[in-house]
Image (cartoon, rainbow over all chains, first blue to last red; front, side, top):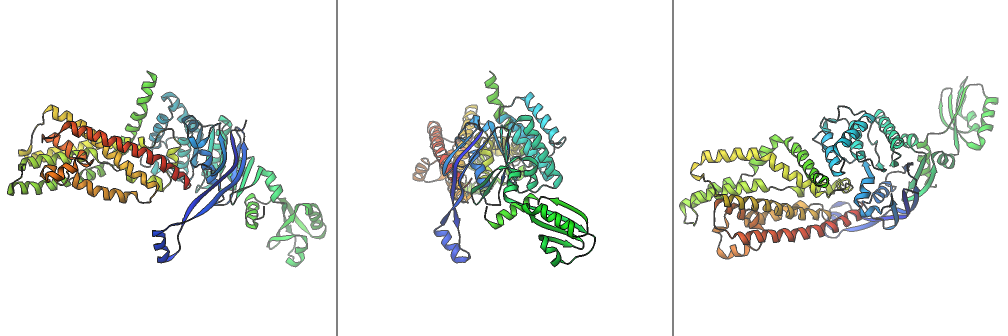
Amino acid sequence: MSIIVAENLSQSYPVAIKEPGLRGTITHFFRRTYRNINAVQDVSFNIEPSEVVGFLGPNGAGKTTTLKMLTGLIHPSSGTVKVAGYDPFRRQEAFLHKITLIMGQKQQLIWDLPAIDSLKINAAVYNIPDKEFHRRVGELTEMLSLESKLTQPVRKLSLGERMKAELLAALLHHPQVLFLDEPTLGLDVNAQVGVRDFLREYNQLYQATVLLTSHYMADITALCQRVLLIYQGKLMYDGRLDGLLENFAPYREIYVELSQLLPAEKLMSYGDIQLLEGRAVRFIVQRELLTRTVSRILADLDVIDLTVTEPPVEEVIGRVFKSGVV
Amino acid sequence: MKNMKNSFKKPLTLLTVYYSYMLEYRSELILWVLSGSLPIILMGVWIEAAEGGNFELRAVDFARYFFAVFLVRQLTVVWVIYEFEKEVLQGKLSLRLLQPIDPVFHHLSNHISERFARMPFVFLLIGLFFILYPQAFWVPNLANLVFFTLSVVLAFALRFLIQYTLAMLAFWTERATALENVWFLFFLFLSGMIAPLEVFPEAVQKVVMFTPFPYLINFPASILVGLPVDLTRGFLSTLGWLLIFLGANRLLWRAGLKRYSGMGA
């Protein structure tokens, strides 16, 4: 049985618009005009327990709005949601015990106190007995390599440590469903990897369902077998990550190192040149033409080295969003 | 029994954690205590006035009254509207809403534990006050102390509830604190903070007693110094206003949440 069921979800909300200049300001003061933003339109999907699903889309595509509907912070304008069998918007206690929401740019930890104090509050709020509280904190601290950090004031932690402490606080009640909105925002590469590894381990250990949005494609490729692609409020793709590449990236890259310099005009006949630096060339070639092109290059040119790679995912997604045709 | 223990655990944890939070601001606490010394300044003004003019109250009565006002203010300071407005505008309320506890309990325990953190400084000032002005020293009788304690707890509850109700307007306007500032002006004059209500014309006194203001300061302060008060009426009015604001608060809270989520949470 699916743990998350979203059917024909739509959400639109009014946003005040203000014309620039003094005149606009005065009009804005007396009579506000609002424009309806269709943040999400007719989105449907099901997520099975213990699945890790990535939510992809450019800024303003409707990812956060969808997460807010799934957590019950906002009521869908139309359509239905069920999470773990509950209607999220009623925010029943049993439902709140089963979920968590982690937002990369919003903190719940008390800034001037050590994280352990905020954790104590969470333990009390979620009725976690003392013994169990210490066990969980110990376990999660180890998984997050946060030892000795919990007794420092949160403001003294690095951004990466703070995010990990936020994760600890958000997971103390062992939720079954994790909603993560840009959990690695602003973190350096090491910290990103740390958060990613932790999420993977947590998912395997507790069979928790994870739905996460991220700008960093590496988060998605490292964690999610399945992706939901959302663009301008509409669900464009729902399926395996490699399927997304098949569908949207019928290209391959061929990297060739030549034994001698050749003019671009001569190389153009083999494919789109993406890069030409001295004797190094990178071609973009349609997948169907790949074998033929490779044999032509090997036959015609004096090649030292040749590799074929898939283009990086962010490039593919970027191309998809840029062209607007999905 | 286990449930009993659990139901105490939540408030106790909240209070102890927020107590340590407040102790992080030790030095600020002194300033906050001092910033509440307007009554002491007014005391000087009124003592002067009492010595010159003819009021029903003697100079020493004014001194005691304003001392009591100072104490009541220290015990009932409320700032929930500033915190709440910030949470709404920055969207932090969203995270709070996903916890199985009403966010008001965070604010409430924050306020209550601040009281405990503030007390040592308040006692220090009280000591200093009586050293500088020993004529004003007096020992209130036990009954007055008991009623004072009760009335000050209720005054805090009412002040908190009124401000938290105004705070709900943050769901509709970006500057709910502006309303608090207007409200504070009325509070300043009608609560008995600037002058004891006894010196107001009788007609004004009568009208003011129908508003919630005198029960926030004048009522508890008068009990402590032993000025004549109508205890029954005072307590019943406080309770009545508490109920009215509790109702308004819950209605606005529900409507506000709808609006909050309507605007995209």
